[in-house]
Length: 337
Image 1: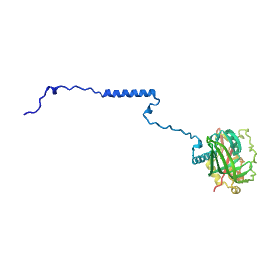
Image 2: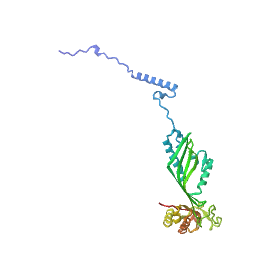
Image 3: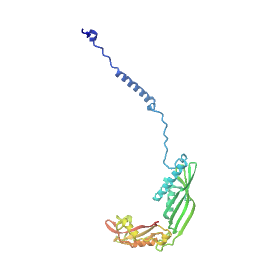
Image 4: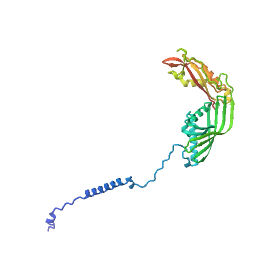
C-alpha cells in the first residue's frame, strides 16, 4: 500500500515574503552617532577627550644652558655640567674663538681684575692681554674642581698649569694658577679671576742681536710707491702668493731636515714661533730677510739661517706677471719628549 501523503491545497499555497529590517536598523544607528558627534562638536572644546583617558601635562624644560636652573640639579649633575662648561670654554679659546655672549653675562663684575665690563670691553681686554702671551698653553686640573651653590649661583675654583713667553719684556713664564669662576642663575660667567698662584718661574732671556727691540714697531724700508720694476706688493695684493717649490709639504720637509734646535733654547725649554719677514723677488730669490718677532734663546738666529739657506721660491704673480712680494712667515720651534 502506498503511504506517500497526497498533496493538499495548504501545502500548495505560497508563503508570504517578510521585509528585511537590517538597513533600517543600520540607518538608525548612524543617525544616533551623527547626533551625538554634532552635540559634542558644538558644546565641547575637545570631543575626543570623552573617549581617551585623562593625561598629565608634560612639562617642557629649557636646556639652553648647561648650568641654567641649577637649583634643580644634584651636586653630581652640577659637577658634571661644570666640567663640560669649563672644557668647552677653554677649547674655544684654544681654537682662537672668543665670543663673550656665549659664556659671559651682559655685565661681568670682574675679569682678570677689571671690573664691571660690558661684553665689548671684555673682548677688547681679553685680546689685548693675550697679544703679549706667545706660545700660550693652559692645562686645567679637573680633579681640583670645587664649588658651592647659593641663591641659584655657583662659585667654583680649580687649578691650572700655564706657560707662555711674554715678548714685551722677554720673559718665559710658567706657574700654577688657581681660578675662581662665578656663574649666575642664567648659566653665564659673571666673574673670573686668579685668586692664588704657586710654583712660579720667570726666566729672563737675553735679546738676540738680530731681533727687533721690545716695544719697537717693525718697519720695512721698501719703496711701495716705486716703479713697476721696484714696487713691492703685499701678499693680499697679488693674484698668486709666493711659495716654496713643492708647496708647504716640501718646505716642512726642508725645515725638519736642516733645523738645529739651539742648545740654550733646549736647556731653558724655550719653544714657540719665530716670525720672519722677507721679500720674494721676481726670480724667486729671497731678499731682506729679517726677524719680525722672536723668542730668544738662539731660535731667532736659527730661523734666519734656515730661510737664508733656502732655495728660490716661486714668485708672486699679478696679471700673469711675476712681482716682488713682501711675506711674513712663522717658523715653529717645539721640543719633543
